View (cartoon, rainbow, N blue to C red):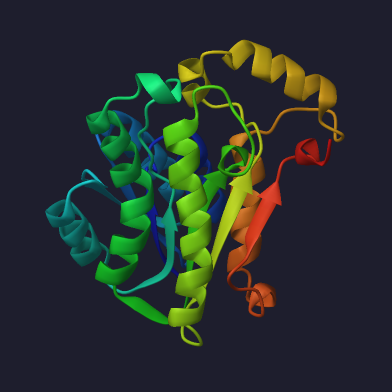
Length: 236
């Protein structure tokens, strides 16, 4: 399986790469700045028996996405995880920051799906979060971009069928470095730990395992879905 992951050098993207690393799989890791981190993840992929290729590129740049698609070649799994966004109240967000957020998350989900060569039977998977559907402090721009990804999932699933399946994983609160950018990150962690029915906050591997499930041949009848993986937090 040839797998392309945007934002694959850390956090959830790195966890997905490690989970899918196995003999017979080639993992193409896109990263923006931290080449050393990307190389470390690639080394883990190889250690687990897979093949790895790292490709630097800004997902906001169409030329970079074209170069990434060409480097990857025909893919069996396209996983859009990369995201850059502004964490501010709605009235403090500058137009340039709003555009940055949507251009790094929503637009590449559409554009890279168009630019990449998708094999018959391929899967496209987006990574979203609960901020797409419920209030999160400072999440106006990012939540909007994630909600757009979920809507686009349904559109693409129909337009790319029956040759390609399209789904998105919507994660609950996951313990990653990104939490340090949340105005109330520590309070959110404490709340989630206390109120999640399954008794803990999420880890990157929790999302990676759902991605793996969606790539399993036994999931061949699932398309156009947003799978919520949050330990039950959204139920309360």
